[in-house]
Length: 178
Image 1 (cartoon, helix red, strand yellow):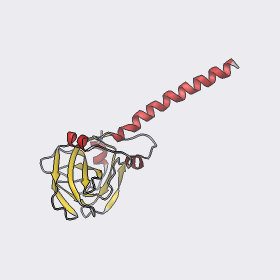
Image 2 (tube, rainbow, N blue to C red):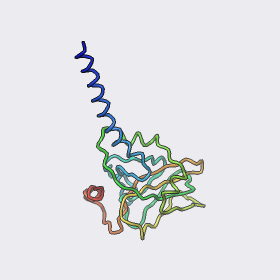
Image 3 (spheres, rainbow, N blue to C red):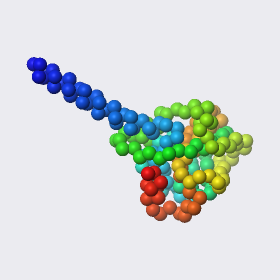
Image 4 (cartoon, one colour):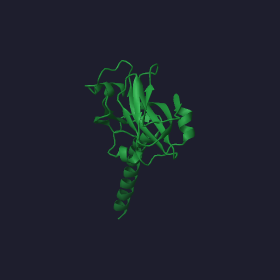
């Protein structure tokens, strides 16, 4: 009986310790300055595919193209009042959790967004679309946050490269994420 009790305690400890590591790894998706994937969108706003597991909550937002060259378009049927761009690092998630679904439950505080932003834009007269000039920005991963008139906050990940040519080979993103 003692052997069975010790065996059970050992199994509980082993399982408990192993679970903590996975939980730590998979929670990085929630950090404001972390990108875990992208929706790939062409120059006309048409979805092309998904790279890795995006940790975003785009709601009514549509960004294109992704990856972006010197210009990024933001469109929405909902009126957008503010836009913030936050630089991010890329992390590949190695867990089996549904990051895209979990990200829909994330909530960021506007103050946290403003503390991390490198660029912001107040939009007085949003007409379903705005073009953002990204010239002078550093090559890399970013999150675009947008606030709507009813104070909802949405965000979408994107990659910027000023020397970007139309993306045919997604290994560029794999290389940038190392």
